[in-house]
Length: 113
Image (tube, rainbow, N blue to C red; front, side):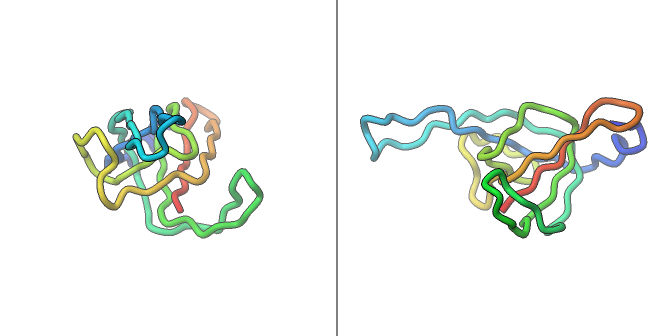
């Protein structure tokens, strides 16, 4: 990510990942890991995207961050949240796109839906 782009990461996003689910007990509650908080910039909506299954979708949010290990299916919420489970209003990541700028480290764009 270029220095200019990095300076524009004025917001924070909190990320959670489902850690495990008991296949023997379909009524068991999901376990979540809080991956952390990351500097980001975001906007509501965005251009139509195509998910891994080839379906087009209109993103609810478009979030730009430095490259991390965030994956499709993780839950995100804008702002700092210390909860160990996704907060009310968190959204599921439907697409992760990454690219490397001419100079600097890779950056990612997350699309929720």
